[in-house]
Structure formats: structure tokens, C-alpha cells
Length: 390
Image (tube, rainbow, N blue to C red; front, side, top):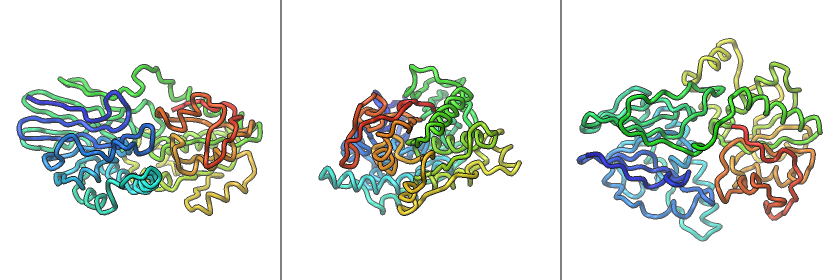
């Protein structure tokens, strides 16, 4: 009889890690960072409640760090099995792990903690990692395991395990269709057991066109007032979706031309991976590509990869739009822009993703009158500050 144990991602959003056991096989689904209240919560460095050496295989649903961030530690602690995901997830996860290592080092130093993995563990993990396609079953003993599109981010997947005539499906994180770029999640119709994410399980999401209209209005209002629109955005999917929608609004003359800066080295690298795997996009996006449209490049958009380029944004007068990480304002370049513009009543802070309890983004979303950022305590005077769209 199969057994499923939850070692994260249950009764909380982060730290996803599920163990599926049947007979001699022990299959792990995801191995992510705990991220509340910090980017790297101290629990992430604790010993696993299972023996990593006894895990035969790890399946990764998608590249977000709360699903991948402890994989190098798993390897460091003795895991020597195979890792499977889609090819885009493999490439994006590599970027995410390299990026998170730097953040982990800074937080460990700040809190007097040890770094629980290093570059060599990332390298070893990538050697164990195999990219597979959707609907390409992997046989592990008596288990047949198949990845199916979950529509969350590029390459994201549900994990379907068939054994003894029963089918168990781990949904991973699910998309909110229809999205600008990706195909809709596949329907699950014949599972005997379904383990499903429920981050927004009690919320009816607004449709895409409604979100787009609200985005248009926020941009128009901010530009009309001569302010700065700051968008803290996750490097994977949120950033690419926002770029796509702003591109579409600009090309259809629904918003005026304005300087827009993508101020995130990780998001810039991730966008390059998106362009590499355009075959994962939906029909609308592929039609635009075939017609000669570059989905992530348009007049007024500047990629600021270096620190010097990032600082030069300050010299560009408002109105302007800045997209930067991190998505929860826990670090990254967005906090420099927030320190500069949160006290400007003409400007807007637009939240476009989940804000975990304890994060700076949640503090802002909950309506704080002031916050402590980089040694300063700017009063929060921005308008429309807590509008969550996506």
C-alpha cells in the first residue's frame, strides 16, 4: 500500500516536500526552501526528517525556490538518486539555485548561521538532473510516473504516479488560466488520490482581461500624476507576464510610451530561458512570435543587469515604470527603489503576487504607515499601494 508523508508545503505555502512510498521505492516530490518570515527560514538548514540516502528519485514540479531550494542540501546530505523535471524547469532551477546561494550567504552571515550548501552541491545536483517531456513516463520499479502540464510557470508540471491499479496525482502549483503566455493546466479526471495546492483556495480570481484593464488604469493614473510605478515581481513568470501585457497595451496604444526598466539580473536571465522554450507557449503567444513580435522587447524597455545600470535609473526623471525583485520585497533591487519612492504621493507600488506572512511585501500590503528599509524609515504615501493583480 502506498504512503504519502508531508514534510513541508502543508498548513503553509513554502517548503514543499512530499514523500511517496510504496514497497521498496521512496519517491520525493519537490524539496523547497521554507521562506517565512525570512527568504531562507532557519528550518531550511535543519536535518531532513528522512534519510536522503534512502530516496531513490526526486521529481520537481517547477523551478520556484520554495519547491527547489533544498535540493543542494539533499545532495550534500547523501542523496545520489536521479532528479527528473521538464527541461525548462531544469534550466530555470539552476538559475534560481545559483541566485539563492548568494542570498543565503548574506542571511546566514546576518543571523550568525552556517550556510547549509555550497556551489559544489549545486553542481552535483545538476549532474543528477534529467529533463523529460510531458507525457513521457518514467518507470521506477513497479511505479509509472508521468509529468503533465500544470500551467503555473514555464515547464511546471503535475506528477502522476500509477501503481497497483491506482493513480495518485500531485498537482504542484497550478496556473490561473487563461494566462498571457502558457497553455492551460491539463484536466485531472481519473485520479484515485489528488494532492492539490490551495494557496488561493478560498479566492475567486479575476479574469485575465479584468486584470489587464486594472493594470492599464494603474499605469495611466501613475503616469498622469508624474509618478513612478514600482512593481516588485518574482523573476519567473510574473515578470514575463507583466512584460507581455505591458507590451500589448503599448502596441495597441492603450498606454503612452514611457521608460520601463527591468531591474533584475535573475529575471533577465530567466527571460532568456523563456525565449529558448517558446514551444511551451500557448497559441496566442506563438502566433505573435510567428508574426515577428518579440514578446519581451519593445520600445522604451531597458534591461538593467549591472549595478551601475541599475543606479542609472535614478537619473531618469519620472514618470517611469520599474519592475524588480524580489517579489515580496524581502531583498533585491526593489527595496532601493521603495526607499526612494514610497514617500512620493505621486507614485504607486503595485503588488502582483503572493506576499508571505512576515515579508516586507505583506507589511506593505497590510497597510503599514511606515517601514524600515536599508536604514531609513520612509513614510508610505504612495497611492494604490496594495493592488494585487495576478
